[in-house]
Image 1 (cartoon, rainbow, N blue to C red):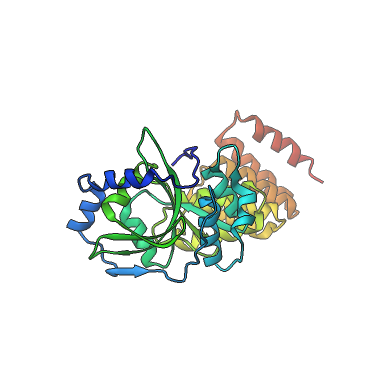
Image 2 (image 1 turned 90 degrees about the horizontal axis):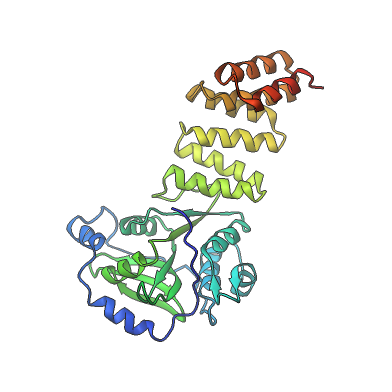
Length: 316
């Protein structure tokens, strides 16, 4: 899902009116699906160990993120996170800044698929959920970050850390309404040796690539290995493992990763190009030229591969 640029700050007093209004709406489709087809998960879950930080004015983002980061074992205060993500001019925090701040703690912000059932399954797996809500209306939005820490299938309620309240109960139907108005934005924050219970390969690897792009190569390398334990035939994970190993100077590991990727897709010219550079680093000149030659066979008009051939031919 593309980032939706919104701001989230203090819940306005008027939100109470809007919540009451929304509560009168008909049952939402995802709620109805859960009621008609209950998932095979515990009937009640509440992650009581998730810390609570009462928010200061407009600081629901820092308070909520501090909650999940502390839950993962890294002590941090909301004020510290506010310095990273709070935008005074907006009186709130942007989602893209929330994700960037999460990476600064060597943790992965993995976006979920927008399904209420996925939230419940993550909670059942022990993962609190960082969500954005619109507690107002589409025409009069009231953006607010919260942490989902539990649910009760029997009572059909979600349990949240929200604002100045450590335990807020909200019906499935009402939560779905307010969440839908924020485009179902939700993150699970995990360490790099963990994959969220419901995460797709694409969503997880998007988070890893984001880690790599901010220069945390060693952390990304670890996360690519984690991805391959879940999705052993994923081409992007093998390629990312090779690229990150190369950047770390771990050329034997990079060669192994690229060769594994080529077993999945031997027609991927870019992989032959990358393998050629690894082999050159390992002093295997003849094999390096064979590899770049293979890249050019697959894509003979590619200027980058031609440049690689010339560079590798004169590799010192």
